[in-house]
Image (cartoon, rainbow, N blue to C red; front, side):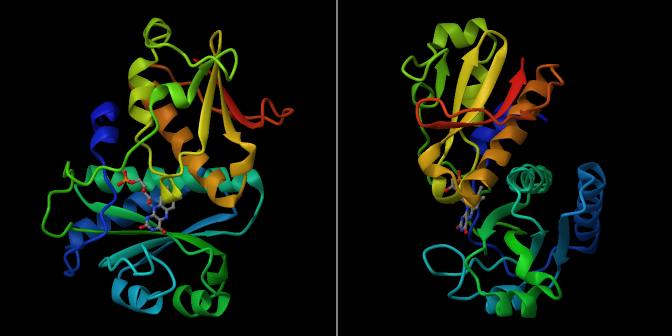
Length: 267
Ligand SMILES: Cc1cc2nc3c(=O)[nH]c(=O)nc-3n(C[C@H](O)[C@H](O)[C@H](O)COP(=O)(O)O)c2cc1C
């Protein structure tokens, strides 16, 4: 996949055709979930597939969605996270976005839906035993009316000088420096990664061949850690498309200029 184009064009879809996807596509979605589950090798993350989306959408009406209105998709995937460990929250973002990307590659529209604010009784009723641990859903289906990659609804993003720095947080990396390091395409693309409320809590600090991912200490919460997992996934995918198989390592270091270090990768 050409990640650069993919990221710049992907958009959250909130209006879906109500009809169910055909059996072949649904089987492909199940296969994607099985593949990602096998790769993630985690006992605390569990996907579930809800084929009858109407039950889920009706049950969450007024409790989740966008601006108080539930997003009605024909199908949903839930991710149950049985831990509040920081690393698991990062993995939540990483693996759910991996699934999300695979669905978008099949020309499906998708939307993350946060349900961590929904009461436990509602979640157990909708998602079954352990349902109170479901914190996120991905709704998916055929986009209604407009094209999947429609241009007119793009959500603004931070410019590179606001989130990519060299050696110190008061020196934004220049376009020339990024070009020299071969990272211009990467950062120009990952800036389009999705985040809850489009909060974009990530900051990158370049130091020689190392890139350290930080988060504003003031943004340090469960939701932002999930966003961080999303962008970590895209950075790895972008590097892989450039022939670099480097992987992030989570780190625990003292804060720097009000920033909390989360992970480091060598490029
Ligand atoms: C972890 C996470 C949670 C999100 N939760 C919701 C949500 O509850 N409702 C919603 O409408 N969009 C949700 N979104 C989608 C974001 O609002 C959207 O990605 C962001 O505004 C950027 O817009 P775009 O995806 O169209 O580029 C979520 C995204 C992420 C990554």
